[in-house]
Image 1 (cartoon, rainbow, N blue to C red):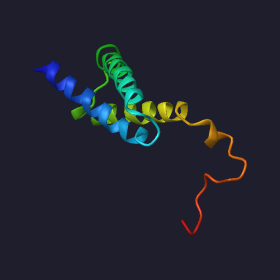
Image 2 (image 1 turned 90 degrees about the horizontal axis):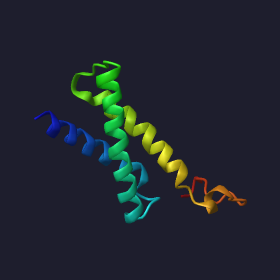
Image 3 (image 1 turned 45 degrees about the horizontal axis):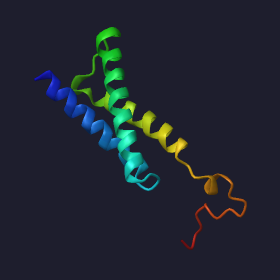
Image 4 (image 1 turned 120 degrees about the vertical axis):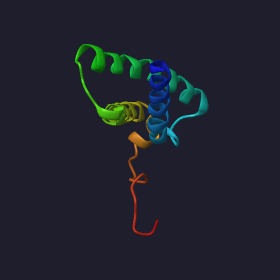
Length: 97
């Protein structure tokens, strides 16, 4: 039963952090990211729960903090070079848009 709950939390972590990457990545890239994220989520979960004896009722804080940092890191690495090298400030918002 514990394995099913851990798998459910891992799937929720992948879905939460996928929201930050929807416009930046294509489907094969998202599949690779989800595979990597599932591995790192279980590693993070094992380190926190088994070795550091971290107690979180329901596991919500552990999932949310992992998803925030993982999706921020992944979205940083998936920025296109056109956005980074924008000389004309076309990537910013305006009052008319």
